[in-house]
Length: 323
Image (cartoon, rainbow, N blue to C red; front, side, top):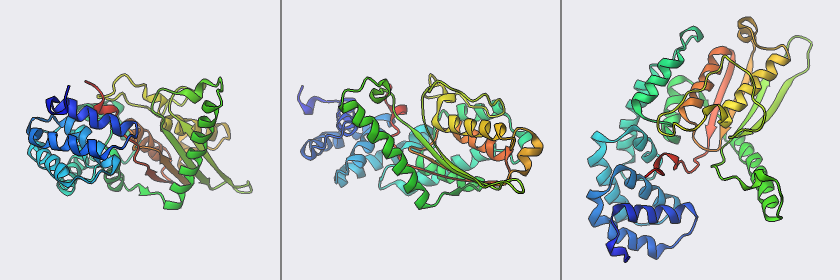
């Protein structure tokens, strides 16, 4: 089949595939753009999102293509699904500010369901709010808008650098193991790798030594789960088959709470209320809303702990890979 015979889905999939595998072919991307622009009015929201992501990720400088996508996105804005909206504001499109304005209103309305007191947390109501929006994640921009509304500060840049270095070490070690023909099955993962890194600094009981440390967790089952019943994960509507109890952030926070309980520092309302310190969290891609909920539950349980958050961009394509 010649490129001129490709429909919008074929053109979108082709651009997306090259970007996913990191194959940069500028003449091909320009040829895709030449075919896509006249057909842009026939693109679905999913196809617009995948195409925009492919050009943005590959840093292909094709302004007519991005402007055509932007124009079509604006024309579709009134009926656009929330997940697509949150995906697109993470892409460098000419319509970015217009998208962010609409997305910010959605996030602000959603944030009204976040209680300020632990006794007001309702897991079923939280799930219903997410499912009504049909969204798994607010993405990088949308999540930061939400944290700003909730008063969760962005973690400092030097912390993010340390987090990325620790994550890079794990990726490098697994890459070396894979190349050398290791039998370690962990080095040949087929799922998308997501990491959560954290540093904590807790004010110790009088006369005790300082309580500081770091944690690094990866998504997926690792053989051990912390039995913390008071932090609830949430099934999500788009990737509904994913077990959110295995998210890296969920595992990290529950194991952290389990460790605090073992040390006699947490576990009752009285102990939780007096624990004072800071927890900085970094995730390698924007968190899903289940993990946002878990982190907020943590903040409600430990109201004297300062929670700070930062995240990388990831590729965030899982919501747009279904056909």
